[in-house]
Length: 114
Length: 115
Image (cartoon, rainbow over all chains, first blue to last red; front, top):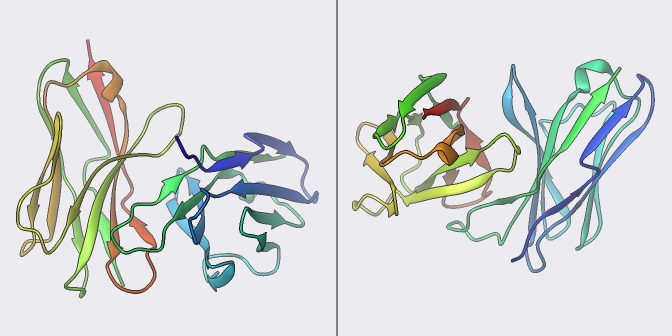
């Protein structure tokens, strides 16, 4: 059963530290999304890739967040420097790019910044 | 812009009973997809059911069915014979058919199934 794999599952770090979250999309999927989930804002889109190219990162704070896809099997989301308000669950999702194809989500990374 | 509204933050239902979760959306698109995702305490996002806007027939998946009213932009989820394992957050989501297949989510409804 193909799955989106996210690491780490949990991350606790101190304010100011760099955080890197990783995602392995489902093999053959050419779209990758990063979402952030908080109690206050719900699920927000941070970044979106198609064929490894960033198409939309308007939801991401540019000064501290960066998202990349070094290759088709790896997507990364970095926060530098991290702040307490970044505490959230970060989800990666992948899709085949077809309009009728649902997104498949990873299990998320719960980030706590103290 | 697309917006999805879930007006019921919390709901509860007795085991074996039926419950309906509401969702409305706003869009200028004519072709799109609608989804219900379930998020149990494990926080995994699980696809429950999907509906294609150009299909008039309501989608069903076992105990889950939808009532899709395109003119009213309404997309409710009915869960029949509720089970304890149905306890979760339920998110309604919208996806345009053309262009970026990003999901727009509602704020969710927390459903508790009571034994």
